[in-house]
Image 1 (cartoon, helix red, strand yellow):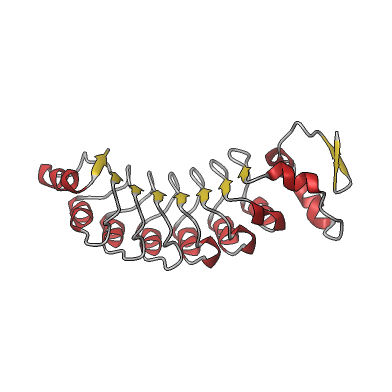
Image 2 (image 1 turned 60 degrees about the vertical axis):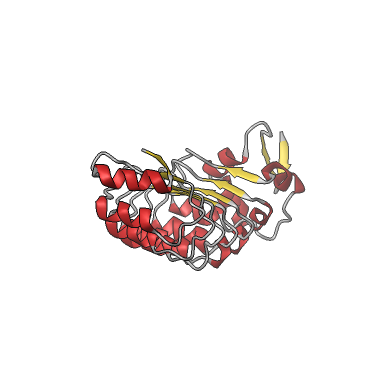
Amino acid sequence: MTQLLGLEWDRDRDFSHWVTERLAYRLWERRGHPIDDALTDWLGAQAMLSNHGIDDEGVEVIVDYPYLAEIDELDLEENRIGDRGAHAIATSPHLASLKELDLEKNQIADAGAIALASSEHLAHLEELDLAHNRIADAGAAALARSPCLRELEELELEDNAIGDEGARAFAQSSSLAKLEKLDLRSNPVGDLGARALAKSPYLKKLEELKLSTDGLSKETVEMLQKRFKLKS
C-alpha cells in the first residue's frame, strides 16, 4: 500500500482504476493538499485510460488534473465520452503537451469534433483517433479546416457518418499540410468525395488513405490508387 493525498491504496493498481473508482473526486475535494510526487511518477509520459466506463463528468475531473501537463499521450478509447467530454478535453490547458489523443469508440458527434478542432491547447497533436464515433460532415469539415491542428500526421475517422461533403473538406484543406495518414473507412463517401480527394492540390504529404471502395466506380478507385497508397 502507498499514501497519495493521504489516501491509502494498492500501488499495483494503475492510475486508470483509481480514476474509475472515483477516488479522483475525493482528490479534487482536497485541492489544498500537496500532490504526492509518487502520483506524477506513476503517470509518467502516458495516461492509458481506455475501456473504464469514463463518462463526460469523469473526463472533466481527469483533464482538470494539473500534472497532465507532463504527458504526451492520452488514451481514452472505448469509454462513454460525448460532446461535453470532448469540450472539456479541448478547453483544458493541461493538455498542451499532447502529441497523441485516442478517443476511438466513444459517443462524440459534430459538436465535440468542432470543439477539438478549435482547441489551441491541442496545437501539438500529431495523432488523433476519432474512429467509431458519431461525427458527420460538419465535424469533419471543422477538423479539415482547423487552424489549430496543423501538426497532425495521422487522423483516424473510421466508422462515423462522414459523406462527400466531409471528404471534399479534407480535399480542400490547406490546414492539414502535414497529414500522412487518413482513415475514412466505413463512412458514406461516394464518387464525388473520393474524386475530390484524388484531385486535391493540398494533400501533398498524404501517403496512406483508407477508404471503403465497395460503392465507388472503377474509374474512381483507379484515380485514388494512382495518387495514394489506398487501403479499404
